[in-house]
Length: 236
Image (cartoon, rainbow, N blue to C red):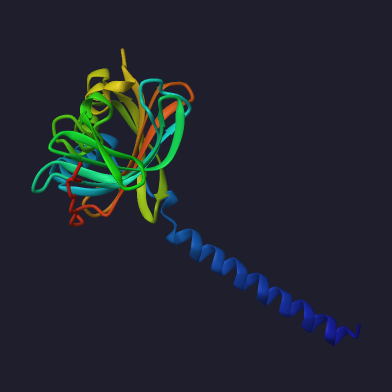
């Protein structure tokens, strides 16, 4: 290659490298990863109040591993406190030793209604005797109470959960708070827990995880905070 052409090529490559370094520098400067994490206790307090005031939400719940008394593998639905406590959606459950997918459920007037056969609802009695998903929104027994009973909280990173920029807070939750939201867990001591809390805005709770024993956990992912929810009690 002639000297002039070689010099031109080298100059062109140098320009490209400089541009790449400039872009990389711009990207890193706008990254939140270097920002100090907010105080975990303050963030929990803010999210506790927001969650306590929450009147409706969309929920995805998954069970990892095995929690013997909890007959749910996964669940998705809408919860509301207005005008009354209620919930509806679909769940994958274990019923009488059989795994059933996409079972419709409704919680209304404190009772659990399920459609083991598509569209044919049965009244299974008090939801609390099986699993009361509507209790997740209860200010006294639900996720607000879980957040209020975090001990030794630590903000240990940032994470995007379903499109929401959150701060991940780890700690433990008292057995009383865990058993209030899910008596089937039967906690006898503090339970390791993680909360993913919206860093800005209202500090909505985006996700919470309770791990009553190693490898066995319940994860609740929330979205559509405050969206209007209508639940119709099925005819049985």
